[in-house]
Image (tube, rainbow, N blue to C red; front, side, top):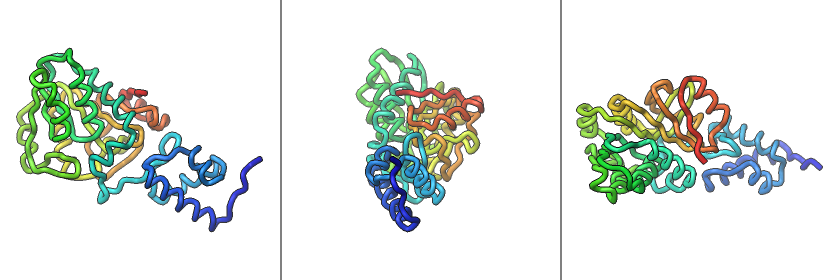
Length: 266
């Protein structure tokens, strides 16, 4: 028997309560909300669509996540717990791309830090040089010395992400050409391209893109289909996007139609 639906007033209240749960949990599945609020999954999807229409949440495959506003950038440690298993798998897939003797740029971020951790675990690698603007990234790579040489780009510290930005960060980037860039971001969209939530890091990321022959974007499923404040590049400029199975299949197909290779990891 279908579950009885509530009045418009109660529906509005239910949506506000759903929003509170999503903000608290970071990601909630449709089935969990259906059980918690005792409504059908069809109703939950309608509620989530309404919240997305208000700009409160992002709809992703199987559920929703809260919208990250530019003035509410999440600290590194908070982001690290979101989609944690997926980020580990994405990082491992990125690390598998690297060969002996390569030069890399590894961006700041929780998923790129997972890639750095996976690179450290690859004891077969030799003579790899990594340039990075992320303090956490550098610390993840430190145990691999001297197999992996780490070069910090320098610059002004942003404590929220433990990242280094202007006015010094791009001086080295103007002087180097690397084999591979492992780039983090906050949004990957077929039309809007690759985007980020804050402007200072965006400028460094743009310089990184210009310095690399191969450009690999790491993005958990919540970022696929999202568009944020700062535009980094069109999707055609990216060689490979590595994401997780939580990514919206329709958006993944659209990215591939634009000529971008997308690799899904479990």
